[in-house]
Length: 126
Image (tube, rainbow, N blue to C red; front, side, top):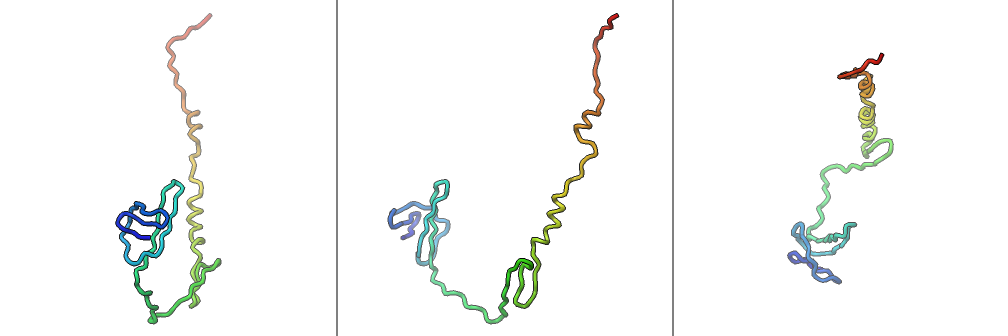
């Protein structure tokens, strides 16, 4: 496996043309090739930059967080944070209320308006 320029060298396929989104740095570890439903192939490359893991900070306190059903989050200090789904119920209900309808519908107004007929000629039979 090797990435050089616009070509990715794969073990069983050889050189394959590719579009590189950004220039990688470090050692090439692995590649995952996947196909979409549209038939397009994508290669996901894993590189090791060689940097060490950051050290843990010993200056502050660590806080544990427990996610629950009745309360969204409970910290190890005992503070409880409410469930956000309950906060939005009032907003959801107010947006789903029916809008004020006119007292008379448009069809009823059409039937009530006067109909004007121009009479051009008429006969009276005796």
